[in-house]
Length: 51
Picture 1: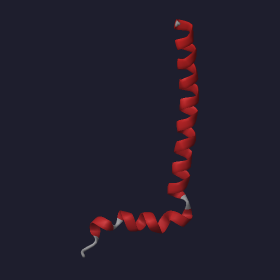
Picture 2 (picture 1 turned 45 degrees about the vertical axis):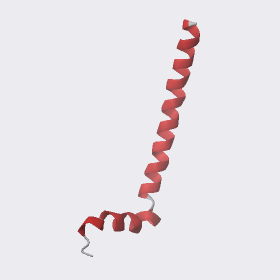
Picture 3 (picture 1 turned 90 degrees about the horizontal axis):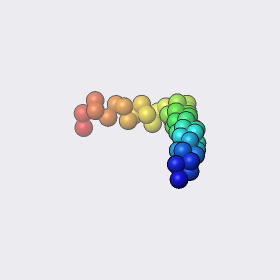
């Protein structure tokens, strides 16, 4: 049983880390994509608007 847990934990740590690194890269690319710049600038200025 202990060997199974250790193997499963190592698998989850390795592939979980890889999954989150890839996910972070996708989110970062989306946030920095030039096409989305205006959308994020508009959202950043919402608190300064006087409606």
